[in-house]
Image (tube, rainbow, N blue to C red; front, side, top):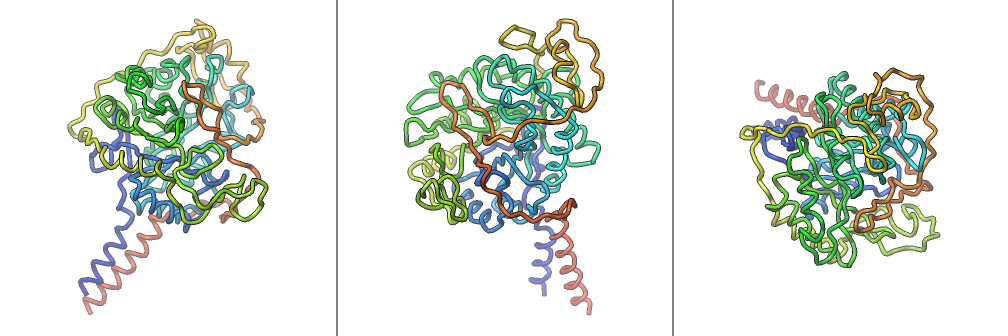
Length: 462
């Protein structure tokens, strides 16, 4: 009888197995007060949503657990789909999810179109946050990925920051857990450290990002901390006041991939400042960045189920050697303890906002952020002026960003970043809830657990 009681209690408390992540100062912490370091994998098997196939998620989560991963990054999701099974599979494996809020037609800045932050985009971002905020293993949301790739793009930074401001306000309005909201930047030398500082600057914390992350592919082959330029990344971030981590990394030239940069990221050089890294990527594709494959490459013209561009995208994952083992071996020995939350006293202040520099950084840090629906042309003069005027609401602009076949633009750092193509031809079948938000796995399991507990107690009493 006691065994039944313990089983019921375990079921009722099952959802407490993974501790939510939150921000304090420049670090990430679990609810238990332990500092959290990201050991992540970019996970986008298909272009629309990889978190709808529960059995596939279970297979992948099990192997990721062997790898030593504690996080995945997902670039695109379908908010109306049922994600309970996949999110539970990853939670059971101790794996958190970092979710991008944008979709193919809601990029803030893409392909030369004027930057924008519209009511349509705002509502689309809300739907993703609504769908995922209930999961304890959602570690953070990205409002964008590699929107800026040259100095002339810098005016788009204000729209990225405005999106983060508004999503943080929406999170508060809805009473959601304070899931961190941040941005994933391309590592562009011309934008360092202006973009990084701009996203955290200012006296109003509600307008700053909760975290900042970088897609960097600079550490290639047999290089060093200094030769790779990681020492400069560390120097730029040494006094940063919000968490910073690598949202993509893992150069693949030359082959095989050694992942030696992980020693620096999780070691004495950087672990006191950086909160870990996400490796690009899980599945092997034409860009040769995969850690696993599901089958041998197919004919690129094949139209079989789960085959896109000649690569099978479902099944039992098989590690690609020696890359998989190289990363696993690094992560197994790199376990910084950091600092306990109780002992940590944040001391860094927000950085000064960068000043306007033609062709390099074309945003005045004192300019007010755009409001929802503000047209880019209206704010260009304010953003670039030394005497910005007070922002005023504009008529909501219609989002007309064309659907894209790539998740982001390529980085122009010292090593070429991978081409991240998510083909539009594949449309996975998903379960639709007629616009209603799915019941969270937490509430489902708790109800079942409490019912079982009640039955056991009644049996004991009788």
